[in-house]
Amino acid sequence: MTDRLSDTDKAKLLKVAREAIISAVSGKLPDPIDLKKFSKELQADGASFVTLTNKGKLRGCIGALEAYQPLALDVQEHAVAAALEDYRFNPVSADEIALIKIEISWLTPLNKLDYSDNKDLIGKLRPGVDGVLIKDGSRRATFLPQVWGQISNCEEFLSHLCMKMGAQSDLWQQKQLDVFIYQVEEFKED
Image 1 (cartoon, helix red, strand yellow):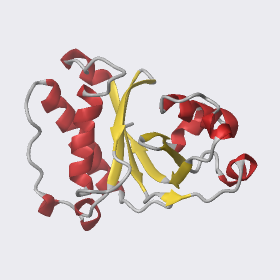
Image 2 (spheres, helix red, strand yellow):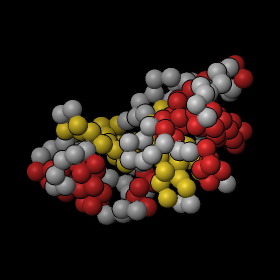
Image 3 (cartoon, helix red, strand yellow):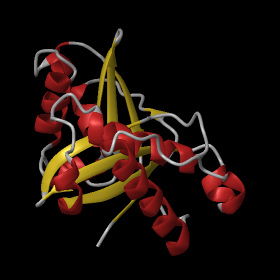
Image 4 (cartoon, one colour):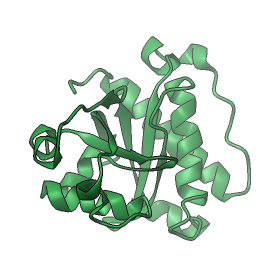
């Protein structure tokens, strides 16, 4: 995905996320966003994930796969959720805020991947480029493209996605799943 957000827009979104987290951790609602003060790109509907790290380790990550609200509001909502609602972690504490680094991923629309068999599926995935969403009935799981940095092997990547979905790791080899790909424009605090 080519960069479509200006450096100013990226800085504004990171500021929105940081301010929302500070408010939420203090037990307050984030300040309302006046969309008129944002660019048309940030006013347009957009899907985002907000990832929090502490000393390089994952501390929370929540987002949406499909756009349903203006991007600025989406980032604000998911920043709060990543700080307080990621079931894998305790809520971020006030004394931890200074240690938290924020990363935002702005997602392209999902594209269904048509494939004939496991080998074809593996051949169509682009490690480091594609985020992958798998679905089996009502269950689903996704990994952002950044996860390829930790799991670069396509077979392992799909197996971990199946486990994240709550299925056997080899489910993707046993039956044809619905597979969608997307790309992200990712940016983070220094």
